[in-house]
Amino acid sequence: MNGLHFKKITKVVAGAIFLVAACLYCYTSLFKSVGDMQADQRESLNLQQSDVVLSDAVKNIKQTSNNKKEILNPMGNPADAAEIKDWFAQRGNFSFMGDEQLSDYATYEDNVLIKLGENGDLRALHVLADRAKNINDFESVLHKAAVLGSTEALIRMGAINEAENLDSMNVDDRKAKIIEALSYYDAAQLRGDWWGSIVRGENLLKRYSHEINQQDKDAVQENAKKIYDEIQKARNAQELGEFDNSVPDSVIKFYEEMLRPL
Image (cartoon, rainbow, N blue to C red):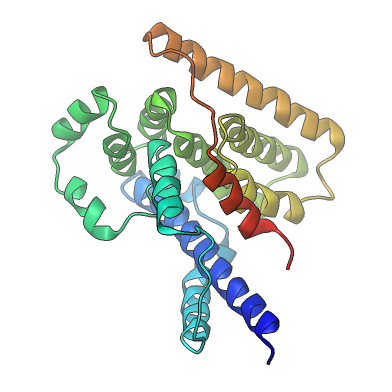
């Protein structure tokens, strides 16, 4: 096996591990947040059956990676990796942090988390969302997080719609849910965070491409702008200023590395 071919294989393995692990974080967060909801609400939030195979996929990919001598890191050098992790964390995505960095919040009482959230702690708000007893509380906490700057909150709000059993719906109801989910992913993208559109939105479009036309895609963009404007308005009311939608070069390169064809 020549060196170029080997590097291509290891890059695929590294990319696959990263994407699957990140997807698992998103799915796990959604499962945790609805775990204590009433039975009828939990039923409406069941994820697609295909999602449960992800854990096996991770095992298989990790087993494959153990046979490789080198794994390429899409985050680049340590300085870039630190900047990427910090950028995502500032937007409510803590999937790149280790368990030891997150476990302390799990021990906090709700009143402590609420106080931290009032002071702008996005991690506290996301933990509160995980503990929500119903959908309204879940969305309310995520909306607060989105106003404070969490793009992950927008992605999770979109995932609520995608989590329903879309295949059992009639075409019109399914299309409405898909458009709403994609609208939240695109709203996050307007903030510079493409993660939801790439990890979840693209797959959703592929699955139901025969049902989504250009008019629907235009509606997604229009709705995304409305979502963005609404949270910016709420942000202005709290005198928090304009969102910082800048994306550092390290994050752009990270996405390019993960998505570019070999």
